[in-house]
Every structure is written in structure tokens, then in C-alpha cells.
Image (tube, rainbow, N blue to C red; front, side, top):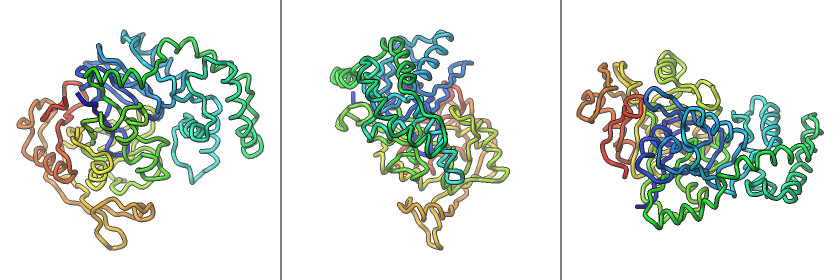
Length: 427
């Protein structure tokens, strides 16, 4: 069975956790391949709600092996806290695998993230302040700390010294902050070594052997396509590649082994943080979407910006990811509107544009061109098949499918694990 990639097709927060969890019982491995604890998934199992920030959603599925790949940046304190919280609730976390090549978020990465964002003022990116960007910058600058470095104190000390040579100059001379002591950082990091050692493994080897043995491997992206460092709304993006190509580099699996790429789409659009958002609503409809949809960031706690569905973005996600399927979430949130606007194109400088402009300036000035689809009033949370949906809800799904360029294979009609309509199997 080829590998599957499951990722966000908008700006994140589309409901990837639920989709991954639903598939988790049918797959052997679930792999996080990028990002860190700046992402968040909410998974509802029965009457229990789980908020995951760093751990793969598959950790809630017995029999599934959750993996944190080499492309993820890991805050050891967050990892241990999440594991402890799940253990206290009776979740078995012993099968977790952590790549020895994953990079560590150090205390100084968090400090640099926070002071830099404050320094930017009105030009701030809207980061979570959790050290994600600075850690990826260290990785690219080849002064990063990897998980495996925790098991060689000499190498760890040398790397921390190299990183702080420059950072302490910036902190003291530019930001008027105190210098960070090398020994203090090394001591803190070494304190995590024994606690996480049972999970550390050569995940690249394990995953490739699993695929050779016809095991089913699901790669789970954090954030969303429009937050990709290369293909998102730069500079208002994350510091990694949530797009499908990131699964190859972030987990060490070749592209020829990936057979299906599933994009998660919310039935409307949200984003957290700064940056352009053509369909954003500032009226009662936007507030209603936020309230009914419970649109508050799992990791940040910030209210999400809300707007109508953007088909231009969906088409773009289909193209850059090579999407084979969509999982449409939160369709139930739209119940009650008499008619529902859908953005089918943009108007930029008086011209109609059908595809996402590559120019940041053009996208910033893009105005949505709407088509209006008839809404429905019936409760859809008990629907088990597509035929159970009201005709107008069926029409809305079919219209989005046609506009987005890939078939919709599943529909979320409520937050629960069982509140999903499966049209075509993903496996």
C-alpha cells in the first residue's frame, strides 16, 4: 500500500486532527513531518476532547505507531508535558517514535522569537512565539541542535556556544536583554535526554522498511498550504513546508512511495495571525462563523479570522500538492444561512483573476468575486450518507468539488469522530 499524505488546503485549522484520527485505526504509522508546537489539532473521541500540539493525532489510535519525523522542530518540555497529560488520561504513548535528526527548540530560540516579534511592532508576522522560526533558521544556518546531540555533551556544548556567540550579541546590543549562559542551556537540555531517550529512533529506516513490508503510513502536515514557507502568503507563513513535498524531506521517504494526497478543506475559510485574507468578514456573518464554529486556535488561544469559502485557494492547493481527494469539514456550521457566498475569483485592479496571483502585492489587493449558493435550515449532524443531506447541502458540496479540482471523499457534519460522511474510502 503506498503512503498517504494528509494536509491542510487553506491556512491551517481545517480539521486535520479529526481526519487523521479517523484514518488512524486503519493505518500502521502516523507521521508528523514538519512544524512544531505552533500547530494544534483537536480530536473528539466520544465525550472526550483532546488538544494535541506536537504529537501526531495517531497517538489516540490503539495499534497505530505515532512518529515525529526529522522535519519537525521539538520543544522537549512540550513533548514531555503532552505525553504526561495523555498518560494521565489513560492513553498509551509508549509506541511513539522520535527522529534523532529532528531539531530541538532551545530556550534561546524561544527568547529570540518573542523579542524579535515585539521589536517588529506593526510589521510583526503573528508568530506563536514558541521559537519555531528561529529554530528552523538555526537549522539552515547549520548551528541547530538535534535530538541526537543530547547524547554527546561535548558536541552539545560546542553547538550551543556557536549559536550563542551571535545570539548574545543581538540580545544584548540590539534588544537590551541579558546574555544567555551556555552552561545553563546545556544543563537544561541534558535534563531531557534520559526522559525522551526511549522514543528516539532512526525513523527514516523504520518508515521505509514499513512501506517495503506493505504497511500503511499516513503523513500528517501541520498548518496549511497557504502557510508554506515557499508556496504560502509570504512573509505571513510558517517556517517549514506543510505542502505534500515536505512529507518527503521531513520524513525521509521518496516521492514514488506516496500514492494519495488528501487535502483538508473547511466549508468556509479561517486563518490565524497577520496577512492578506480576501474573503475575511468583519460583520455579523463573520462573528456567527466564529461563534458557531468554535473558531479559537488550539495552540494560540487566539480568535480565528473568518470568511467565506475561497475556491481560488482550493484550486491552488490542488495544484501545488497534487491533491487526489478532499475531506470537507465543518459543513454543519453553515446550517441556517439563506444563501451562502463562495469566492470563485478575485478582482485585482479592475480585472477578474481566476487563479492565485504569485505577486504578494496583487494578492494583498485582491477582492473576492462571489457566487451565491442556496443554503439549508435542516440539522445535518445525524446524516450518515450523502443522500441524507438536504438537497441544498448536497448542491453546496458538489459546487465546491467542481470549483476545487478534486473529488470530495468525506464530509464532516459535526465535531465527533462518528459525525462524518464517507463517500469514497481513502484506503
